[in-house]
Image 1 (spheres, rainbow, N blue to C red):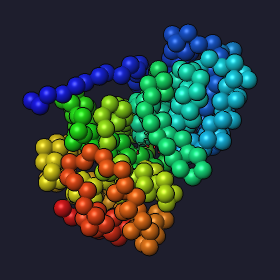
Image 2 (tube, protein in one colour):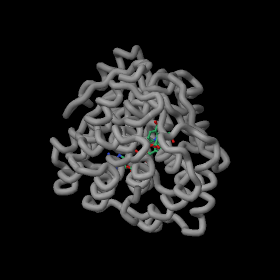
Image 3 (cartoon, rainbow, N blue to C red):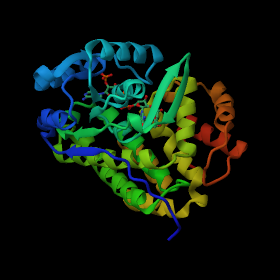
Image 4 (cartoon, rainbow, N blue to C red):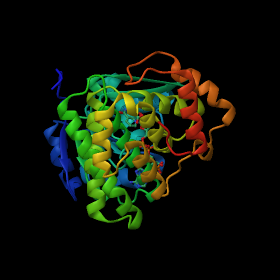
Length: 353
Ligand SMILES: NC(=O)C1=CN([C@@H]2O[C@H](COP(=O)(O)OP(=O)(O)OC[C@H]3O[C@@H](n4cnc5c(N)ncnc54)[C@H](OP(=O)(O)O)[C@@H]3O)[C@@H](O)[C@H]2O)C=CC1
Ligand SMILES: O=C(O)/C=C\C(=O)CC(=O)O
């Protein structure tokens, strides 16, 4: 066993069908009495349901969360929280809404209770992201780690199948990179392998029948595990590429992760053989990169960057940005191999080692 350091992060998880019924009890346990409920405009009805459940312990709803937390939205939400005297934020939705809660917490220290309905995993991490003047900055701060997380699979039943598949592969990406993280540890590796297995068996079932509760439960369980890995260990090439493509070329988050992952794993395969064995074992396939590619392909997810808005003439620029600011990665970053990786991802070609 290699030496390692493991620092557990404090968060309380309530998991199960109907777990939302415990919301008021959990808000009381946090010592909060004035919750500000957060959502996207489209999920306003869910936010209203939360406010109704909280009754006099809800002071308002802020329903303007959008992807990547623009600083203007963060400022607006912070001001509303202050005006209403909120003493906690309840975020229902995906990474965009939970990210807005984090932007409030970062300034005010308000505790967050998160109710995730996608598989992105932000609820389990102390990572925040804020976008200012077109540049997204991310960082880690324990103040933004949600205090309590309620995972209720019933709430994810309405997540469309396409989004469920790409969001699930977004979660798998956290676990896959966690398995070769420079600061990895055996606990996170156990969670990573179990998380990949749970999500990869759930996605084909969700595709067949999107409201199948056992599969929704497996997927959310996997998302919890994979999000925990993201929160505890450092990510590498795959996440860097996705942030570059999302941040500089405005590509959609989960779809970008879905397309890039098989290629990033192929790039790292020879340098991280143990991680590849564990990913393949979790997927029940022979090859980790090919297994991820087929998981996307067979479940109707996009496999080519050209199909989600990337322009071929921007691939060189994307490669240059991804090479800036060196970061730990199992295989050193080599320009020509990285450029080929991006070309393969652009074309939708199968991953090549
Ligand atoms: N800080 C961290 O640790 C992490 C941050 N992130 C960040 O989070 C964002 C991505 O998170 P992600 O969850 O993929 O994106 P969103 O939160 O934007 O959600 C993705 C989509 O899911 C839809 N959706 C969510 N819940 C439901 C539901 N119950 N029923 C129907 N549709 C639903 C949303 O619809 P609608 O718009 O209609 O609400 C939206 O179109 C990115 O900005 C990413 O950088 C991601 C992972 C970790
Ligand atoms: O960009 C952020 O807000 C922070 C982390 C992530 O998005 C993780 C990911 O790329 O899925």
